Length: 314
Image (tube, rainbow, N blue to C red):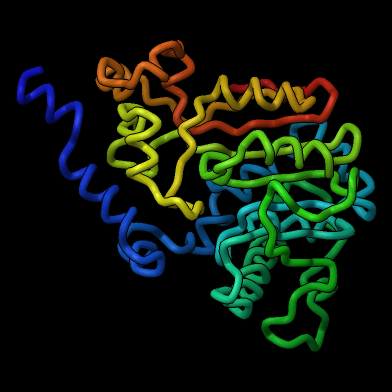
Protein backbone atom coordinates (compact mmCIF):
# COMPACT_ATOMS: atom_id res chain seq x y z
CA UNK A 1 0.00 0.00 0.00
CA UNK A 2 1.26 3.49 -0.86
CA UNK A 3 2.18 6.04 1.82
CA UNK A 4 -0.96 8.02 0.96
CA UNK A 5 -3.05 4.87 1.25
CA UNK A 6 -1.55 4.04 4.64
CA UNK A 7 -2.34 7.53 5.93
CA UNK A 8 -5.92 7.11 4.76
CA UNK A 9 -6.11 3.66 6.32
CA UNK A 10 -4.53 4.64 9.65
CA UNK A 11 -4.93 8.33 10.49
CA UNK A 12 -2.17 9.28 12.98
CA UNK A 13 -4.16 11.99 14.75
CA UNK A 14 -7.09 9.65 15.24
CA UNK A 15 -4.89 6.92 16.69
CA UNK A 16 -3.23 9.37 19.09
CA UNK A 17 -6.60 10.72 20.25
CA UNK A 18 -7.96 7.21 20.78
CA UNK A 19 -4.91 6.13 22.73
CA UNK A 20 -5.10 9.29 24.86
CA UNK A 21 -8.72 8.49 25.66
CA UNK A 22 -7.66 4.93 26.43
CA UNK A 23 -4.87 5.68 28.91
CA UNK A 24 -5.82 8.97 30.58
CA UNK A 25 -7.66 8.86 33.93
CA UNK A 26 -11.44 8.96 33.45
CA UNK A 27 -11.92 12.40 34.99
CA UNK A 28 -9.23 13.92 32.77
CA UNK A 29 -10.29 12.23 29.55
CA UNK A 30 -13.88 13.30 30.13
CA UNK A 31 -12.78 16.91 30.57
CA UNK A 32 -10.42 16.97 27.58
CA UNK A 33 -12.14 14.69 25.07
CA UNK A 34 -15.85 14.60 25.92
CA UNK A 35 -18.75 16.85 26.71
CA UNK A 36 -19.78 15.90 30.22
CA UNK A 37 -23.32 17.12 29.62
CA UNK A 38 -25.37 18.78 26.93
CA UNK A 39 -26.66 22.30 27.67
CA UNK A 40 -30.20 22.00 29.02
CA UNK A 41 -31.61 24.30 26.33
CA UNK A 42 -30.30 21.95 23.63
CA UNK A 43 -32.11 18.99 25.16
CA UNK A 44 -35.54 20.51 24.68
CA UNK A 45 -35.71 24.02 23.26
CA UNK A 46 -35.86 23.78 19.49
CA UNK A 47 -37.69 21.27 17.36
CA UNK A 48 -34.55 19.47 16.23
CA UNK A 49 -33.52 18.38 19.70
CA UNK A 50 -33.94 14.98 21.25
CA UNK A 51 -36.49 15.56 23.99
CA UNK A 52 -38.85 17.43 21.69
CA UNK A 53 -38.31 14.87 18.90
CA UNK A 54 -39.27 12.02 21.21
CA UNK A 55 -42.41 13.85 22.30
CA UNK A 56 -43.41 14.30 18.67
CA UNK A 57 -42.78 10.63 17.82
CA UNK A 58 -44.92 9.58 20.78
CA UNK A 59 -47.70 11.87 19.56
CA UNK A 60 -47.59 10.59 15.97
CA UNK A 61 -47.42 6.83 16.62
CA UNK A 62 -49.38 4.22 18.53
CA UNK A 63 -47.24 5.19 21.50
CA UNK A 64 -49.73 7.99 22.05
CA UNK A 65 -52.25 5.38 23.23
CA UNK A 66 -50.11 4.84 26.31
CA UNK A 67 -50.61 8.44 27.33
CA UNK A 68 -54.40 8.33 27.20
CA UNK A 69 -54.20 6.89 30.75
CA UNK A 70 -50.79 8.09 31.94
CA UNK A 71 -51.55 7.69 35.65
CA UNK A 72 -50.56 4.01 35.39
CA UNK A 73 -47.40 4.45 33.29
CA UNK A 74 -43.86 3.66 34.43
CA UNK A 75 -41.17 5.15 32.17
CA UNK A 76 -37.52 4.13 32.33
CA UNK A 77 -34.85 6.37 30.81
CA UNK A 78 -31.50 4.61 30.56
CA UNK A 79 -28.11 6.28 30.45
CA UNK A 80 -29.20 9.73 31.57
CA UNK A 81 -25.56 10.67 32.04
CA UNK A 82 -24.61 13.06 34.79
CA UNK A 83 -27.54 15.40 34.28
CA UNK A 84 -29.34 14.91 30.96
CA UNK A 85 -32.86 13.65 31.82
CA UNK A 86 -34.44 14.09 28.37
CA UNK A 87 -37.59 12.27 29.58
CA UNK A 88 -38.38 15.02 32.12
CA UNK A 89 -41.17 16.62 30.02
CA UNK A 90 -43.16 13.37 30.25
CA UNK A 91 -43.80 14.23 33.90
CA UNK A 92 -46.29 16.86 32.71
CA UNK A 93 -48.49 14.13 31.23
CA UNK A 94 -49.14 12.68 34.68
CA UNK A 95 -47.14 9.44 34.45
CA UNK A 96 -47.02 7.37 37.62
CA UNK A 97 -43.25 7.00 37.83
CA UNK A 98 -40.10 8.09 36.02
CA UNK A 99 -36.99 5.97 36.58
CA UNK A 100 -33.59 7.42 35.64
CA UNK A 101 -30.94 4.74 35.25
CA UNK A 102 -27.25 5.68 35.18
CA UNK A 103 -24.57 3.27 36.44
CA UNK A 104 -21.58 5.54 35.86
CA UNK A 105 -22.58 8.39 38.16
CA UNK A 106 -22.23 6.84 41.60
CA UNK A 107 -20.36 9.00 44.10
CA UNK A 108 -19.63 11.57 41.39
CA UNK A 109 -23.30 12.47 41.03
CA UNK A 110 -24.16 16.14 41.39
CA UNK A 111 -27.74 15.59 42.53
CA UNK A 112 -28.42 19.29 42.95
CA UNK A 113 -27.47 19.91 39.33
CA UNK A 114 -29.53 16.97 38.11
CA UNK A 115 -32.57 18.18 40.02
CA UNK A 116 -32.08 21.72 38.76
CA UNK A 117 -31.88 20.59 35.14
CA UNK A 118 -34.86 18.28 35.50
CA UNK A 119 -36.93 21.22 36.72
CA UNK A 120 -35.55 23.42 33.94
CA UNK A 121 -36.65 20.91 31.30
CA UNK A 122 -40.12 20.63 32.81
CA UNK A 123 -40.33 24.44 32.83
CA UNK A 124 -39.39 24.50 29.14
CA UNK A 125 -42.07 21.95 28.32
CA UNK A 126 -44.75 23.71 30.35
CA UNK A 127 -44.10 27.01 28.59
CA UNK A 128 -44.06 25.42 25.11
CA UNK A 129 -47.30 26.32 23.29
CA UNK A 130 -46.72 23.40 20.90
CA UNK A 131 -46.21 20.74 23.58
CA UNK A 132 -47.49 17.70 21.64
CA UNK A 133 -49.07 15.66 24.47
CA UNK A 134 -51.88 16.38 26.92
CA UNK A 135 -50.70 18.06 30.11
CA UNK A 136 -52.20 16.76 33.34
CA UNK A 137 -49.60 18.16 35.72
CA UNK A 138 -47.93 21.53 36.23
CA UNK A 139 -44.51 22.46 37.55
CA UNK A 140 -46.20 23.47 40.82
CA UNK A 141 -47.95 20.09 41.04
CA UNK A 142 -44.68 18.25 40.51
CA UNK A 143 -42.34 20.27 42.66
CA UNK A 144 -44.74 21.81 45.18
CA UNK A 145 -45.57 25.46 45.80
CA UNK A 146 -43.03 25.79 48.62
CA UNK A 147 -40.51 23.16 47.62
CA UNK A 148 -36.78 23.57 48.00
CA UNK A 149 -35.00 24.75 44.83
CA UNK A 150 -33.48 21.32 44.13
CA UNK A 151 -36.31 19.07 45.34
CA UNK A 152 -37.07 16.12 43.07
CA UNK A 153 -40.67 15.19 42.27
CA UNK A 154 -41.91 12.33 44.42
CA UNK A 155 -42.42 10.07 41.40
CA UNK A 156 -38.82 10.35 40.11
CA UNK A 157 -36.30 7.73 41.17
CA UNK A 158 -32.58 7.47 40.29
CA UNK A 159 -31.23 3.94 39.74
CA UNK A 160 -27.47 3.40 40.03
CA UNK A 161 -27.62 0.08 38.16
CA UNK A 162 -26.40 -1.43 34.92
CA UNK A 163 -29.00 -1.80 32.20
CA UNK A 164 -28.42 -5.55 31.87
CA UNK A 165 -29.29 -5.96 35.56
CA UNK A 166 -31.86 -3.31 36.49
CA UNK A 167 -33.28 -5.19 39.47
CA UNK A 168 -36.80 -4.25 38.37
CA UNK A 169 -39.66 -6.79 38.50
CA UNK A 170 -40.87 -8.61 35.38
CA UNK A 171 -43.35 -6.61 33.30
CA UNK A 172 -43.05 -3.52 35.49
CA UNK A 173 -42.19 -0.89 32.84
CA UNK A 174 -44.32 0.53 30.02
CA UNK A 175 -41.76 2.55 28.06
CA UNK A 176 -37.95 2.48 27.87
CA UNK A 177 -36.10 5.27 26.12
CA UNK A 178 -32.54 6.47 25.64
CA UNK A 179 -30.45 8.82 23.53
CA UNK A 180 -27.02 7.77 22.23
CA UNK A 181 -26.68 4.93 24.73
CA UNK A 182 -27.10 1.72 22.72
CA UNK A 183 -23.82 2.19 20.88
CA UNK A 184 -21.88 2.30 24.18
CA UNK A 185 -23.17 -1.02 25.53
CA UNK A 186 -20.65 -3.79 26.10
CA UNK A 187 -23.39 -6.42 26.43
CA UNK A 188 -26.11 -5.35 23.98
CA UNK A 189 -27.73 -8.79 23.79
CA UNK A 190 -28.02 -8.97 27.58
CA UNK A 191 -29.46 -5.45 27.68
CA UNK A 192 -32.14 -6.27 25.13
CA UNK A 193 -33.09 -9.45 27.00
CA UNK A 194 -33.38 -7.49 30.23
CA UNK A 195 -35.49 -4.86 28.47
CA UNK A 196 -37.84 -7.54 27.18
CA UNK A 197 -38.11 -9.00 30.69
CA UNK A 198 -39.00 -5.77 32.49
CA UNK A 199 -41.38 -4.47 29.82
CA UNK A 200 -45.02 -5.38 30.09
CA UNK A 201 -46.61 -7.23 27.13
CA UNK A 202 -46.90 -4.75 24.26
CA UNK A 203 -44.46 -2.41 26.01
CA UNK A 204 -42.45 0.07 23.96
CA UNK A 205 -38.90 1.22 23.47
CA UNK A 206 -37.74 4.44 21.84
CA UNK A 207 -34.01 4.79 21.24
CA UNK A 208 -31.80 7.16 19.34
CA UNK A 209 -28.68 5.28 18.26
CA UNK A 210 -25.67 7.19 16.93
CA UNK A 211 -23.74 4.81 14.70
CA UNK A 212 -20.93 7.25 13.95
CA UNK A 213 -17.52 7.00 15.49
CA UNK A 214 -17.84 9.35 18.46
CA UNK A 215 -14.66 11.06 17.45
CA UNK A 216 -17.12 12.78 15.12
CA UNK A 217 -14.54 14.29 12.77
CA UNK A 218 -14.02 10.72 11.53
CA UNK A 219 -17.52 9.15 11.51
CA UNK A 220 -16.49 5.79 10.00
CA UNK A 221 -12.93 5.48 11.24
CA UNK A 222 -13.69 2.83 13.85
CA UNK A 223 -14.88 0.40 11.15
CA UNK A 224 -11.32 0.04 9.82
CA UNK A 225 -9.98 -1.96 12.77
CA UNK A 226 -10.11 -5.62 13.71
CA UNK A 227 -11.97 -6.54 16.92
CA UNK A 228 -8.68 -6.98 18.76
CA UNK A 229 -7.25 -3.66 17.56
CA UNK A 230 -10.47 -1.89 18.49
CA UNK A 231 -10.38 -3.41 21.96
CA UNK A 232 -6.86 -2.07 22.45
CA UNK A 233 -7.94 1.41 21.35
CA UNK A 234 -10.94 1.73 23.66
CA UNK A 235 -11.52 1.74 27.40
CA UNK A 236 -12.21 -1.45 29.32
CA UNK A 237 -14.45 0.11 31.97
CA UNK A 238 -17.38 0.88 29.68
CA UNK A 239 -19.17 4.20 29.45
CA UNK A 240 -18.78 6.72 26.66
CA UNK A 241 -15.17 5.69 25.96
CA UNK A 242 -16.37 2.46 24.36
CA UNK A 243 -18.43 1.77 21.24
CA UNK A 244 -19.64 -1.67 20.29
CA UNK A 245 -19.63 -0.87 16.50
CA UNK A 246 -22.89 -2.73 15.82
CA UNK A 247 -24.44 -1.68 12.52
CA UNK A 248 -28.15 -1.13 12.06
CA UNK A 249 -28.98 -4.65 10.76
CA UNK A 250 -27.33 -6.14 13.85
CA UNK A 251 -29.52 -4.06 16.13
CA UNK A 252 -32.65 -5.02 14.21
CA UNK A 253 -31.77 -8.73 14.26
CA UNK A 254 -31.04 -8.66 18.00
CA UNK A 255 -34.27 -6.80 18.72
CA UNK A 256 -36.23 -9.35 16.72
CA UNK A 257 -34.56 -12.20 18.61
CA UNK A 258 -35.77 -10.61 21.85
CA UNK A 259 -39.35 -10.38 20.63
CA UNK A 260 -39.45 -6.78 19.37
CA UNK A 261 -40.92 -5.46 16.15
CA UNK A 262 -38.94 -2.39 15.18
CA UNK A 263 -39.21 0.41 12.68
CA UNK A 264 -36.36 2.78 11.83
CA UNK A 265 -36.61 6.55 11.47
CA UNK A 266 -33.33 7.72 9.87
CA UNK A 267 -32.05 11.00 11.28
CA UNK A 268 -28.73 11.40 9.45
CA UNK A 269 -27.18 9.69 6.42
CA UNK A 270 -23.56 10.15 5.32
CA UNK A 271 -23.39 8.33 1.99
CA UNK A 272 -20.50 10.24 0.40
CA UNK A 273 -18.30 9.99 3.51
CA UNK A 274 -19.08 6.30 3.85
CA UNK A 275 -18.27 5.50 0.21
CA UNK A 276 -14.97 7.36 0.48
CA UNK A 277 -13.85 5.28 3.47
CA UNK A 278 -15.50 1.96 2.63
CA UNK A 279 -12.50 0.45 0.75
CA UNK A 280 -10.58 0.59 4.05
CA UNK A 281 -13.25 -1.05 6.24
CA UNK A 282 -12.35 -4.25 8.06
CA UNK A 283 -13.78 -7.43 6.53
CA UNK A 284 -16.32 -7.66 9.39
CA UNK A 285 -18.15 -4.68 7.88
CA UNK A 286 -17.76 -5.34 4.16
CA UNK A 287 -20.85 -7.56 4.04
CA UNK A 288 -23.26 -4.74 4.88
CA UNK A 289 -25.03 -2.87 2.10
CA UNK A 290 -24.27 0.76 1.28
CA UNK A 291 -27.80 1.61 2.36
CA UNK A 292 -27.25 0.13 5.82
CA UNK A 293 -23.80 1.61 6.31
CA UNK A 294 -24.74 5.14 5.24
CA UNK A 295 -27.25 5.58 8.10
CA UNK A 296 -25.26 7.40 10.76
CA UNK A 297 -28.02 8.27 13.23
CA UNK A 298 -31.44 6.64 13.58
CA UNK A 299 -34.36 6.41 15.97
CA UNK A 300 -35.58 2.88 16.68
CA UNK A 301 -39.23 2.51 17.63
CA UNK A 302 -39.78 -0.97 19.03
CA UNK A 303 -42.85 -2.70 20.38
CA UNK A 304 -42.73 -5.97 22.26
CA UNK A 305 -44.58 -8.58 20.29
CA UNK A 306 -46.68 -6.21 18.18
CA UNK A 307 -46.54 -4.33 14.91
CA UNK A 308 -45.27 -0.75 15.01
CA UNK A 309 -47.27 1.87 13.13
CA UNK A 310 -45.23 4.94 12.24
CA UNK A 311 -46.33 8.29 10.84
CA UNK A 312 -45.90 8.99 7.14
CA UNK A 313 -42.54 10.67 6.64
CA UNK A 314 -42.65 13.83 4.55
